[in-house]
Image 1 (cartoon, rainbow over the protein chains, first blue to last red):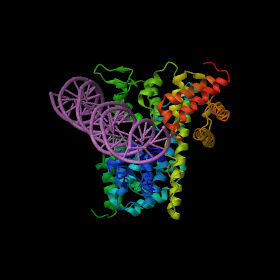
Image 2: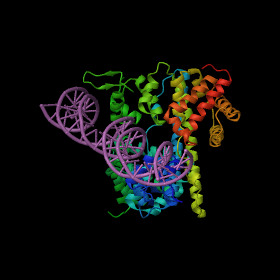
Image 3: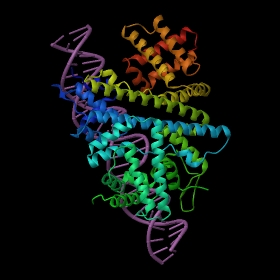
Image 4: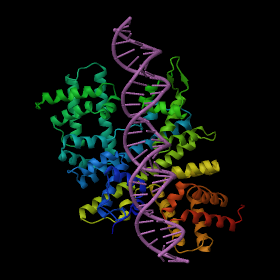
Length: 255
Length: 255
DNA sequence: GTTGACCCTCACGCGACGTGAGGCCTTAGA
DNA sequence: TCTAAGGCCTCACGTCGCGTGAGGGTCAAC
C-alpha cells in the first residue's frame, strides 16, 4: 500500500523535488525504502504531508514546520484549529486588498489622487502565525494557546476587523503618548497597558500580568515584533515593554 | 514633495532593500536623485509602486510585473480589474482550504481516515494569473483580454466554483477519451473540443477557432500548461492541441 | 564641530526549490 | 531474454527575492 515519490507528488500536487527536499530537511521522511532505494510513503506520511502543506500555505518556514510537527506537545486538533484561524485572517486580508483595488478604481474613475496612506494600508503584515507560534514556543502555555485557537476559530471577518481596529487603536494611542514624551510609568500610559492586557484576555486567552510582562519582553527581544511595532512609532516596542512591566509591578506580579 | 527611500518604505510597508532591488531591476525607478545621490520618489512613483505591490501580492514574478507595467499597451483600469479578479480567485481558494481543514477536523473527531484525494484537493494551483498574462502576451488581443477581465471581475465565489467544475469536467471527459484510445479527430472528441471553445467564450471572452487553436498550441509549447494539464492525464495537453486544431480545421479556420 | 539618523554601493548568504546530469531499477512488449 | 520507456536515486549548480552587514558619505539639530 506504500506510494512512490511520484504518486505522492501527483496526489498532493507538489513536485518530486520538493519531496526530496523535505526528506533532506527531516520535515517529511518516507516510512520506508524499497530494496532499490525508492522512497515508500504510508498513509501516516500522507497525513503528515497534509499538515506540512497547510503550514506551508500559511507561509511558515519549513524549518519551523518541522519543529512544530516534531514537538512532543504537537496536537493535531489544535494545529488544525490554528490553521483555520490563520486562513480566516488571510481571507480577511484579501478582502482588504480587494477594497484597496476598488478604491483605486474609484479614484481612477473620478480622476482623483488616492490618499497616500490609503494607497498602501492593505499591504504589510501583522502575521498572527508568527505571534502564535512564538507564544507557544516561549511559554509552553498550551492551555492559553489552545484557548486562543479555540476562541478565534469562531471569529468571523467582522470579528477580525473589530479586533484589529481595537489593537491598532491601542498601539496608536500608546504611540502618541511616546511621541508626547510621557513616561511609560505615567498613569495614563499604564491605563493603556492595562487596556492592552484586557484586549488580549478578551480576544485571545486569559492574560495574566506575568504573561503580559513576558509579551512585552518578547516585543523587545524578538526583532520581528520590534520591527512591526516600531513601524507605528520608532521606539514603541521598548516603551510597551516598560509600560507592561510597570503595569505588572503595580498589580503585584512577582519579578 | 519628493519622498526618500525610507519614507516610501514606511508608507508602503516594504523594506528599503526591496526598493533598492526594484530600482536595480528597473521595476520601480525613482523619478529623481538628490545631489547626494539619494533616491527621490514622486506621487507617480507611488502609484506605480501600488501596482507593483498588487501584482506581487498575486505572486507575479517581479520580471513579469516589470514587463506588464512597461508595456505600451498597459491599461491601469484593466490591470485593476484583473487584480480584483485574481484576488477573488485567491479568496475562493482560501475557502477551499478552510473546508479542507474542516474535513480534517471532522475525520479526527470521528476517528476516520480521510480519502486521499480529498486530503489534497485544495492544494495545487490552476493559477489564472499565468493564463491571463500569457494570453495577453501571446496574442496581443487586448479586446479579448479586457473583455475577460471585465466579465470575470463580476464573478462571485459561486461563479468561480461553477466555472472551475465545468472546466474540470471537460478536462476529465477528454482525459477519458484519451485513456480509451479515441483519436483526437473522432467526432465525440471534437464535440468536447467545441464544448471547450464555447466554455471559454461563455466564461472569459469570445473565443474564435483561430484563438482556440492557438490556445491548444500554447498548452503544448509552454511547460507550465503542459504540466498542469498532464496532471489530469499524461499526454492530455498534446491530445487537446490535436483536437483543437482538428476542430478549428473542420470549421474552416485558416492555417 | 559633533552626533545620530539617513543615504549610497557592494556583496555574501538564505530559503525553497527548479533543472539537469549520470546512472540504476522496473515493467511490459517483442 | 533483451530492449525501451518510464521510474527511481544522488549530486550539484542555479534562480528569485530579498536580508544582512560592511564601509563610507550626507543632512539636520544641538
